Image (cartoon, rainbow, N blue to C red; front, side, top):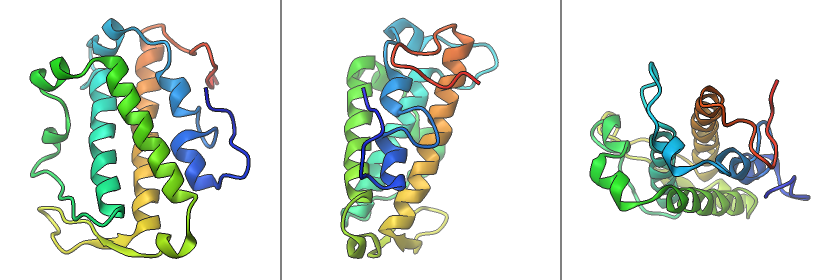
Length: 171
């Protein structure tokens, strides 16, 4: 899958490379649909829901950095899939959608320094006037992805499905 991509900056690598954690493509690889949807006692979400949530917010962030004032939902629960959403997109499709968004974010993060300093609006019901630079929005989202991908790794470990064939940190 993705090895360290030479020449790419560290922020870009957090989205699609081998940076502070296992590459996202490795984290998601070789996981059966049934395991992605399996509920684990004590865990609030399935692997599928964690990735769907990350993909949802990734699209919000990408909209913002591309100049669309993409609002946050009224409540965070709206950024997790309901039964209809889970039926509408299989696991492979969800992984592909998430990884495409990660590639797009990496390309923006590795792009024009002047563009990264552009200020974008990030409206939310609790703070409708919030703004930040494109770089700040990318940094925030890189942390968000790392958080949810870490949860995916933990759930995979609990399901006995870690490490993936391409490798992943086991310590």
